[in-house]
Length: 233
Image 1 (tube, rainbow, N blue to C red):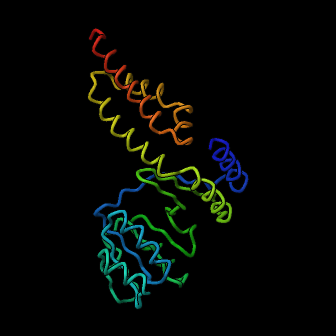
Image 2: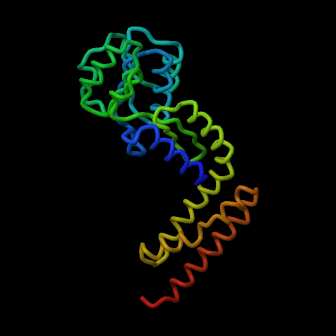
Image 3: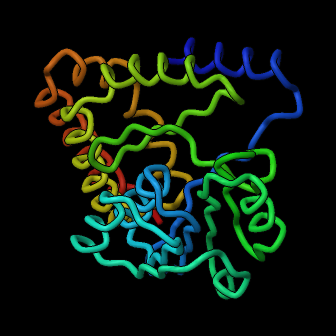
């Protein structure tokens, strides 16, 4: 995994030293998001925004079947109209997803918020990377303009990100809450997790021995609790 990520950084640097994007996870729950366009690309954008809990408005003179199905199944606002600047007011995210570059440029220029232009990404102030998810784990991939390489990396990572890893992550999240309830300092808790979460633990999960890995974590948590109780404060 480390080798893949390092190689990706080197490739990105060689292709374009100024093409680095600041990586972030965007919380759009209950936020107003506007998609201008009603085709298949708009449908893909709509699906991910709805899954993330956004309040989505889609504006287009026509809507493809998939957009209409998503609107019926998951709920969003469809406005049958051509683009107008007023549709961007109060939006948190705007996606310019028409098949007309000139219109998408107008949207990019007018958007007072986060804007993703599907026809000319360089006019966007954020992009949506390719991503794979399993449970609470999400891995996002961006190669600075090499979609074929992104697909190759995605296939490789899909073999690594298994339901077993997601289940183990859920287990760790529960144990994190347990550790937070143990009388200790933030520094001590950080050091604890750094000492516990080692490669050999991950290897057990990958080898199908998640039960053993969980047992090791539980033993470590209990030991940490005992040490905390015995430690003078």
